[in-house]
Amino acid sequence: MNQFVVDASVAVKWYLPEEHGDCAARLCRSGTVLEAPDLLYSEIGNALWKRVRRRELTRDEAGEIVEALSLMPIEVYPSRLLAAAALQIACEMDLTVYDGLYIATAMLTGACLVTADRRVYRTAREAAPLKDQVLWVEDVPQ
Figure 1 (cartoon, rainbow, N blue to C red):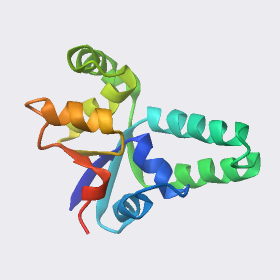
Figure 2 (tube, rainbow, N blue to C red):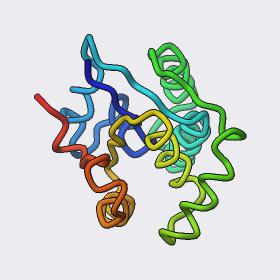
Figure 3 (tube, rainbow, N blue to C red):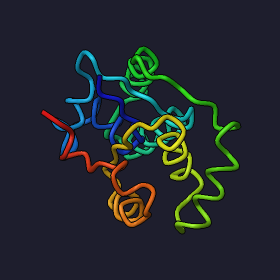
């Protein structure tokens, strides 16, 4: 069984044409357990809102993506339970608390964090306890 924490930089690629979308799609196959903090939905919503503002998506299209994401089999962890750890991670790694929530979820579950955010990837790879627990989106197993 493959177990992965996905951040918004990866999950958005399931629905929008972006670089490495094919790699992100490999996470959606049978037998893969997906996990994320509940922040995922807000971050995806915000990314969609930006695209609606730029007229790259219609409101209806953005709504359909939100609906599709809500149906994905993702084990969701409440941010309120991860907030203290996320703050500590953010302070120690000089990342946002938002990024810290994804890292905290990976640390809690023992899953590998998959990201397409270069700063998160580089920073987490340098952190001793995490270096083997973070994966660049292109490196998702075939």
